[in-house]
Image 1 (cartoon, rainbow, N blue to C red):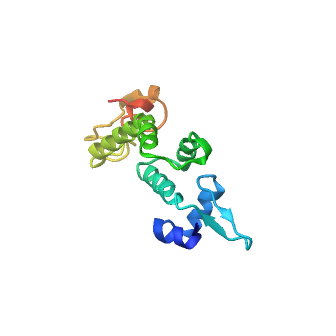
Image 2: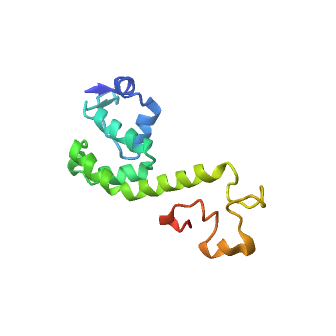
Image 3: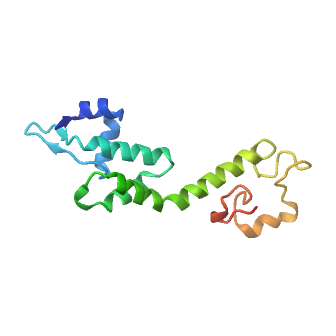
Length: 148
């Protein structure tokens, strides 16, 4: 069993984040008779899973939902990660698409129509883009209604 300090040191996750993750049901601990938290060593792998999922842009809600699919609050295995990451592929592809669109169009215009209307590749003459919903549809991922 590891103390909260040991888990923080080994995982690089601050004490406050560990308590937050526990409050959200992402990790669990047991309490000593003195009411101190103790964690199984396997929490380190679970924390690595959480942090990696966050790094690729997933929300803690996404992570919690994924971890809830594992039986008995089990720590994810390599095959669990492979299965869960496949389910996130569409979402990640949409985010990558949005980032490419933003990168490729950011230097001249952000899609708001207010910067350089004569040279803006995203110029919206006669509000033609209104049918695609609010925001800048040329910067949204195609999966979210963005236009090419």
